[in-house]
Image (tube, rainbow, N blue to C red):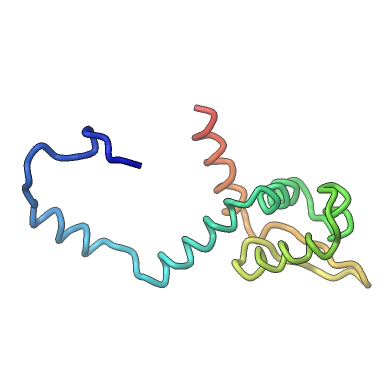
Length: 119
């Protein structure tokens, strides 16, 4: 995609102090990598549907699969990715494994994005 003329400066001037402050306040590369992985996970429609469902209540893999019209294996794969990114957690009740959001921050991410979208 070509750059819009409004995206470019009319003159070539580097503001050294601004650049140095931006570098000093940059996120650590580990944090950037993890943030990117979380946003990649959130970019998937199936995973967003799972997170939105879990925002309301905890659910087992069978219920999530029935809700999404997917196989339990496919849902389990998505949940594993979300669990590895610490977006969801689970608890076992006998033979049933129930999933829920890891904390309120996950819900806030989705709700803030929805608010941005709807404004």
